[in-house]
Length: 112
Image (cartoon, rainbow, N blue to C red):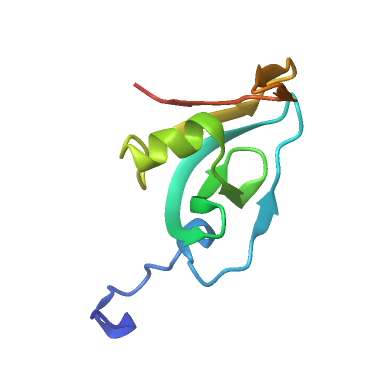
């Protein structure tokens, strides 16, 4: 494991890649979006199945944690999202219906 002594003088850790940094966890409201770079990920299994937390250096908010939903979650577990990817995530204002329940879908896109 590398130590801080092996890092050249003048180089520091940025706030977006400090895993120990306490950052805001965002829950998107309909019409809200995230746009930025994935700087860290964490996944685990809970009572309701697998989940993934993406730390995104959002262009307007700075570093935030986002628990992946809908397309973002599907893309993450299909290995289509990774650290370093530029990502756009938006919770739609229009509702959709699954099994008689209405919800606001969340879309996810990566930069080509």
